[in-house]
Length: 191
Image 1 (cartoon, rainbow, N blue to C red):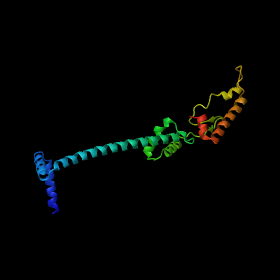
Image 2: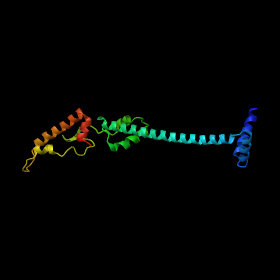
Image 3: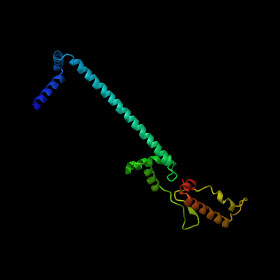
Image 4: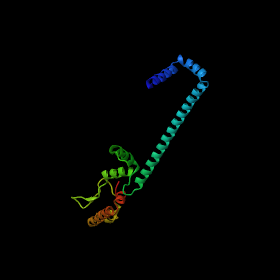
């Protein structure tokens, strides 16, 4: 019996879908069941309105989700930029986002930490060949004004003992800064 009902339903649907049969089916249904056409048109209009409402609602939800995601991104970026242990700069954000995508890292803080660890500026080291200090990744650690005491004002030869003493003091200052607070020392002496 279920198959017979299914075939009848399929036949009626096929007749309504056929352009030649549709007017005849509508006329017959209206005679047999008055108001059928109006109910069908109303149901069709309501279905269309409901679909439009659903579409608008989904569009609004997508916009809100995008705004929420952008807000969360902005807050996370501001947080890692403020973190003195990470010291993330604006130009490093694309590299962190790339790292997040490549490594499937879920939080900005974790990605920033990994990025900073991978790109960490090494602590200053003393050269094997001289008593000067080298700061890896830093080409210039100042203007050299700290050596002014070793050079005479009239332009004569510098006092080399004073140069050595001042250089050792500068090396000690840099090492102390890095030992005390590496993040501040990098800002002061490095990139």
